[in-house]
Amino acid sequence: QVQLVESGGGLVQAGGSLRLSCAASGSIFSISTMGWYRQAPGKQRELVADITSPGSSTNYAVSVKGRFTISRDNAKNTVYLQMNSLKPEDTAVYYCYLKYSPRIGVRNDIWGQGTQVTVSS
Image 1 (cartoon, rainbow, N blue to C red):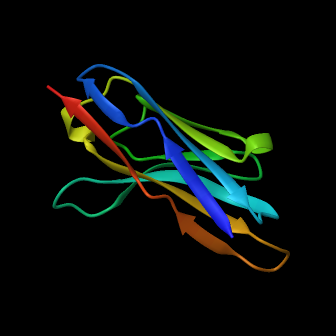
Image 2 (tube, rainbow, N blue to C red; image 1 turned 180 degrees about the vertical axis):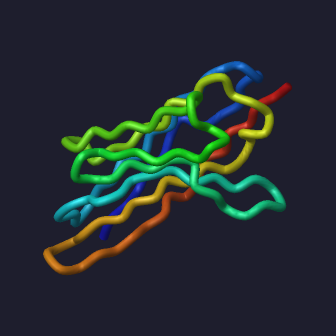
Image 3 (cartoon, rainbow, N blue to C red; image 1 turned 135 degrees about the vertical axis):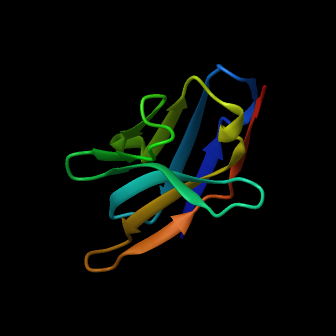
């Protein structure tokens, strides 16, 4: 069984910063992709950023490029999202996402429970 534990959400004023963390634990043989999605009220869930091994290539939504930075600590199976210059339109529930292999030849994915980020104007 694999679990994701998210932390770091909260309320911040526009222009402020927050750092989200997501730690994966359990039966993980390897991780290919870790990332963050978000869902605002009345909108579809959208990709914010992800980071993929090997090579730790990153991918960002256009709306956050230059403001958000995704990083990963492979030793801790943890992914971080540093969010700077936050805007009210960044308000959403942020979900951690993990694509992993519990053993050779098997691929699974899992979502975190979500953490609320609210940016006030």
